[in-house]
Length: 491
Image 1 (cartoon, one colour):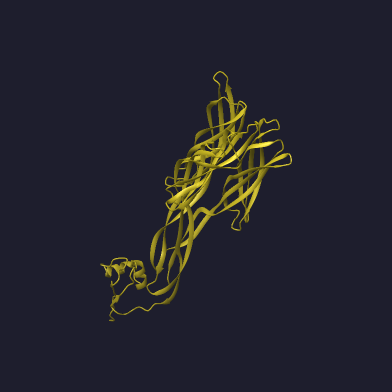
Image 2 (cartoon, helix red, strand yellow):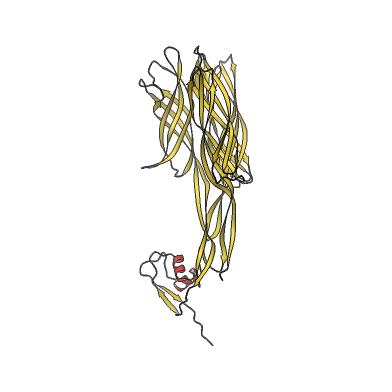
């Protein structure tokens, strides 16, 4: 009877992921003509139930508009939301890690009211304990290998940052938008540290007309967690959950001092690479063996790298424009991108977006959505891409067209995956007759390795190499293998 020993691997990690979309709508009865519309989504929580994930939070809408007297005004409203995603794999014991992004904002008129709709995209990962059994010893001749398993755990943290800066004298702040760029992530003993910049874009009145300006605010956020140790890696996403801006005028100097207070929340997935010394194949000298296997896949996080690129070109516009229009401001700058493999390697392809405010000869204003496509060569193969757009400008060189420029700041977080297939059980079968000759000569298959040859001969790799010290692997055509067997003499 074959004796075997097994062990059980236990580790916490990502079980599976889901994506979802939900639309949140807000009504503004007082608006006449919407110039720009913006929305942010703050995730308050996410819960796993039986076969479903429920996530909920608050969407903050802001619009800049002209009233009936052509005055530029602003309005802001918050809307609570809740959504459910169905999946039979979801169980209450699992931990939900969710990230929300506003994928699109649109405005439409119905009667006397303006309705603004935000399309929210949810990226959801479920975490829990992952286990599998594997053979660790026994009577079999085995091939042992270190296989990689990634264990990971979601963690979170928060901080608040402040910044004071001066701008040319302005009036009311009409609208502001924040995007976050991660510049570095480091795992230490008991904490994950993320550093980066918040790009703050502000639309304000300057005299009788709207004007835009921007600010990059550095930050650092430390996330305490027992899951982090030197050598771990982490993927971090930071969002601005609350922003408070105030402007004070300095009459003598003709400037304004702007104070920005930003609340940041970081959600991180801390990943550790674990080596499991397991058996990937086995056989018996005396019997045929039926092997059972444990198969497990795990996802990990690799290096985080940054790239800054200046792009320019002809922008696509949502409405027509001509030389009689005056360009006033570029606001709500943002970008989106994906990795694409081309003939000359990998590229980050996407679009930089913004709202262009223009004034017509009759004094009326309108907002035009403009998009600048880009394709940037990159050195990474398989990564999650985060990108922000800043410093975006627009010029009308030729009537009816806009030439735009933007600075893109990318963060690429390498995606890793490991598939482990280990022997978990062995069932003894029929006996294999043993040859009784003292010496056998075999003609092996060309290309065989030492393990494949040993398994075919039912001898350990050490026995095969001891009898054939001059063998080279993989086997070449025409090589011979000699096997010696000890003979016993009856007394």
